[in-house]
Image (spheres, rainbow, N blue to C red):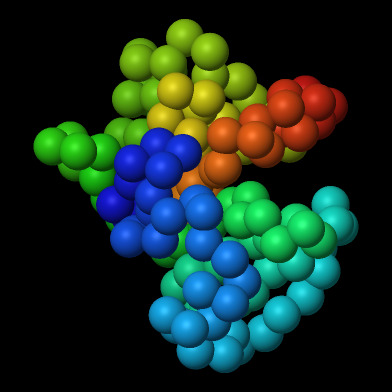
Length: 130
């Protein structure tokens, strides 16, 4: 995953609309509403989640390496990297969430990484810890 925290993920800006995503990637394999009220456009290796207002909330992608500028962090080292470099990191619902890097992931389930829009951090913080 190529990430500019809160700005762009894999070339897609967080300002992208649903129409922008469909124009860039075609029709999704599936579209469904999840249990937190977001509409997910599933393209297999990437899932784009939108609020009802159309605002892009999260992009989850299958990845083995997170690229942050000149840094390349293998998924297996990501939890240690986040804990060492983001003093505001926290755990919620089994996810390690990094406000500094705008990511959420389950350390014991490699391969999937979620990039977050800045405006959705309060929802992650509000989740019950654990």
